[in-house]
Image (cartoon, rainbow over all chains, first blue to last red):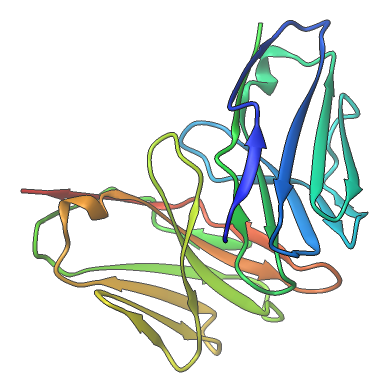
Length: 111
Length: 111
């Protein structure tokens, strides 16, 4: 089972809203990632969790707040986003130094 | 210099052609290497890992040259269904393993 599940698949939110993106994997992977991808660009790393601890924050604005409740779950809390934050948000997980498996992503539109 | 560099293409080839993609990386301490495929508006999917000894999976052959910091992907007998963006990914070394993406190479296979 090489599946990473993300919800919701689509999200439209206003600039004053608070919403959360969810990600779940049951492959026993101890590294989990959030990426942001704009059209015709490669995925850009946002956050890395390793063994449920935040190990990398790629200078992401504080309006994005990650959370790892347990080894299978990863959340991304969104608050006061800007229209330029509209993008595909991808969650991934991996064993250390192995290929990462991606969820289908959440397509976010900020209005 | 970007960590991972790829020619963005597009590569426009007829069915049955052989096509090769190249990728270079800047960090000589990088540990592991992968090719991903991404279809339009979908998530990246792991195509294959890349080893110094070279590895093959059906019509796909990947090669790594550590001395030159160069990775390649060869696709033989191209199919229409191979049309996609191919992303070179290098796991950044040091502490957590961070999949770092090249900008991707677009392949269009036409009848």
